[in-house]
Image (cartoon, rainbow, N blue to C red; front, side):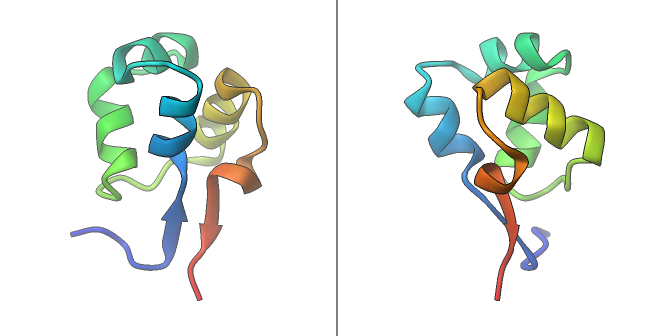
Length: 69
C-alpha cells in the first residue's frame, strides 16, 4: 500500500532525463525493481537512496520527494 504522506516526481524526472528504470537503477547503484517500487510509492527511499537518485538525475532530493499536505 503506497504511503500517502510521500509525494514523488521520480518517474517524471527519470522520463525527462530520457532514462529507463534500468538505466537510472544502474546510475544509482540499485536494482530496477527498487526504482519501480519507489516510483509506485510502495517503497519509501532511505536518505542515502534519495540522495543517490537525486545525484543520478542531476537534481535535489527536494525536487524529487516531498511530504504531501
